Image (cartoon, rainbow, N blue to C red; front, side):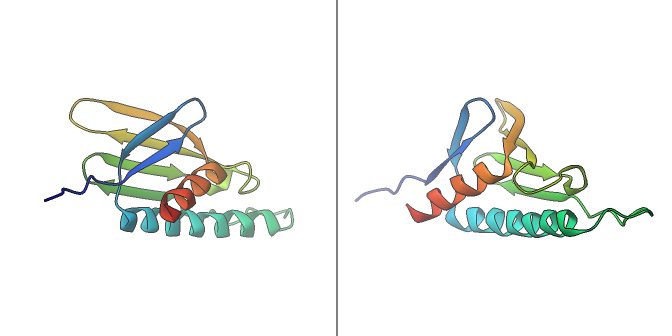
Amino acid sequence: MTTQTPAQITLNLMQGSVRFNFSPQSAQDLKAALGNLVSQLKAIAAQPPSVGKRTPEPTMEYQHTGDVFVEVFCNPNIWPSPFAAKLLVTVRDDRMRLTTEAELTRMIEDLNQYLES
């Protein structure tokens, strides 16, 4: 009888990386949320500079509760393009809490690599 170990994802951060148990379905959900964020950022970048004030886009907030709590946050209104965007990432459990920044494009790459494996 073999027990299957939970799949672990590695997220590469601005400095270093973090690895934790993460289900493929949760990875798909996060990937969808980031895809929506990229669409928002592209729409913002495509808008011509206007004289008036433009309507702000809603923030992107993703939360996952499993072996660890994962939260990803981004305000699309402060980034000029998807390539410049940074995410605020929090990974915590009852013993530790890590809050740091990650690049949007790098996190998408990490999710794709995890889902392909």
